[in-house]
Amino acid sequence: MSANNIETEASDICCASCGIAEVDDIKLKECDVCDLVRYCGDKCQLDHRPEHEASCKERSAEIRDEILFKQPESSHLGHCPIFYLPLSLDIEKSVLQTCCSKVICNGCAYAIKIRQMDKSLDASCPFCRHQTPKSREEEKAIFMKRAATNDSVEVLKEIGIKNYHDGDDEGAIKCMTKAAELGDAESYYGLSFFYQEGKVVTKDEEKRLHYLEEASIRGHPEARYDLACINDVIDSDRSVKHLIIAASLGHNSSIKLLRVCYENGLMSKADFATALRAHQAAIDATKSSQRELAAEYYGKEMKQSVKDGRLNCVTSFSSSGSSKAAF
Image 1 (cartoon, rainbow, N blue to C red):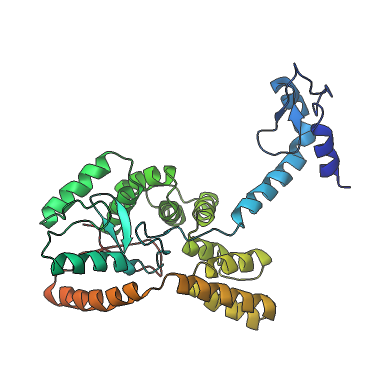
Image 2 (image 1 turned 120 degrees about the vertical axis):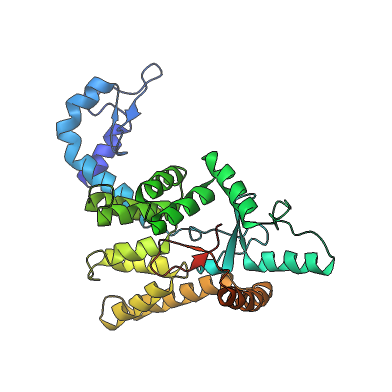
């Protein structure tokens, strides 16, 4: 039995420092960092720190890895709130509704648009049914009004990304930090760029890794891909694990790199085959006949927008990301 197991068993029934047992009138509390030991009070915790510090750090690292390498149920983009199919990692296949800050798949946006055209109805949001703004100025006004509340993750994220690409780094960090505090994976990923490049903030590799991990935990496959390639070399089981998780979310670059890992003996044939099946399943889960019709329709519409010079979009932070309209 390991020392950690012995320490855990002992801490289940008594204070790790003074040894007092937990009874009705004495309640023990767990270590603030790990789950190995318990204490009857702050003094005992402070007195026991030198003895416990090494095992505490080891266990806290194990807990972090358990969280980091847990397979997310879906990517950070989640599901379309109407049809509830997973959203594609290709963000050109979804659109942000400025009225309610919901991201809708193009399939649902297309279906409601065709219905409104057939029945000569006023254009409205597929989700909240709010009337669609009649001009870019009205759309932007609604967008900024929602941003002022500081409670819309999607709006804060989109403004942060726009600021980043417009060169307003301070504005980008401000919005990204707020969105990250609300749990947005893309914003965590965006903040990692600032600490990598040393823009506005001091260059800090440790903080960059922290933000990449936070984004990965929340299902961001590009962040996980970056973690796998952090030293531009795939030479560890951790890197392969990151790639497998990202590939199972439908991330194309990860499955391509896993093929290289397999060819170089870094993973077994069985594991690679499993990753291939998971990757294809994730891609297939985002498909529907309605989305295919939308892809054909919006493909023609986008070509015309580019031709007319009407296309105005904001890109994601992801190096392999596509464009998404914001305002």
